[in-house]
Length: 589
Image 1 (cartoon, rainbow, N blue to C red):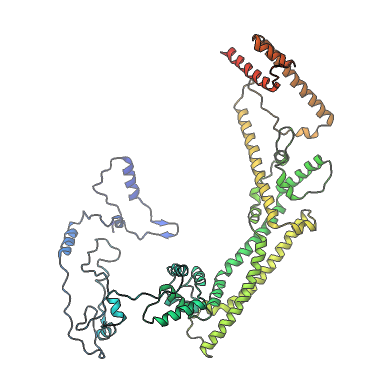
Image 2: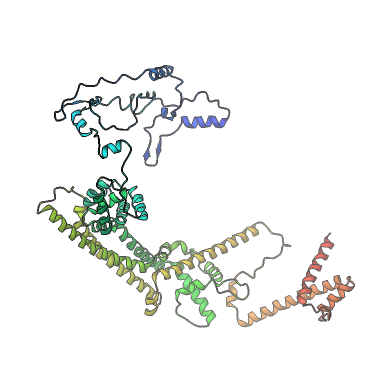
């Protein structure tokens, strides 16, 4: 095999094409992760219709081979002996003197030649087959066509209508299920031995929906007795085959339990493990402790009390409480305080991933699933005893010689015993994890009444949602500070307007006395009054140039209402602001 690509009659008009060709020539070993394709040849890049330009001899041989007629068939053998005698002939021979059943296959008269490169050899698979010697007399006896009967009717294309006694809906359900199942004749041995190589979990679930009722079986048997020469429909044949299996429903239920046990156990154990990790993460997280201390300090100051703690459900309401000046939520001010007092604190949400997973579990359903799993294990023992008695009757005291060693059916007693031991462990784990959660709530200061009323998923959802809001608020504060640092490094001009600090939290406000707060409030009120007076005087000078409209507006501003219009003062204020802005624009132009 050549190790390079030969690309001919393909003009390379750009550097991109050249680079692509060089990439193909220097292709690495064909290996994708753990999948090794290095046994693929370079010549296998050529498609089915690719021409072999470098080998004209092969093309001539190919055309000559195609024009050569196939060799004549071998001569028919002599007359066969009577049907009861034994005779052998090659598989190429053909019986004569008797009409036999024909196989309506698609014959390959002329086998095409293989290409020059083939991984499977220089010849077709048919050329390497060895001749087989057959008992032609027996085949002729077995497949001889009759002059009348059902075989003749099949050969003539006049097949009798099939017997159908089921409803349309039931028949469609069975037909759809049969499209994914093995042939019905293979189902009984697979069900008896519980062979997982023939039927998987989905197949067992389909069979559970196809279990026939006694009424359906009686209808099918009655219709079959009335028309013994008519074939049964696919749905009826499937139900009749399944109806011959003793204790079909217990067998399928026991098989399904053996296949589903690991999944059912995992659905119970994983939520319990997440809850255990969630409690450990919250108890060891320092940021969570800092948040509780900060909220407690703020609440004690605002309420004027000295509470020892609070119920953690209030964490979800921190974003709803807003201050009376900047209308920022209490969660915002708490984040600012935490960043100032505890700069090494985290965003909390990334540290308590198990709390988020626990909030998505339903521990009431976990309790119910555990009870159902114990009930299934108990019923499986009853079903196994029933099958053991049935097998004992069939064997008649003999050993199991027909069952394959290592099948699931033989391993069921050991498996159910193991399931009982694992269920005991699972029950103990569930009891201890729930009791630890109750102890954790007591550790958080909950009363025993509150502990009984608190669900694990509701508690973890409250903490998870709060941590998500805390992370978003903390991130926005950090981004705002980064933007402010960027503006400071950019060298803003002194004439630029000062940033509005009313939305920022000043830590010294928390330490001011009431007299200092009152003095600051009066100073701000005087500044606001002086600014209004200055703006009003400027406006009076500008508006005096308007003869009629100016006097009307000045009278309204000074408290003299226009009796004709009696408009509210806020409308006049809007007009004044627009007029003042227009004057400023005209002055600039």
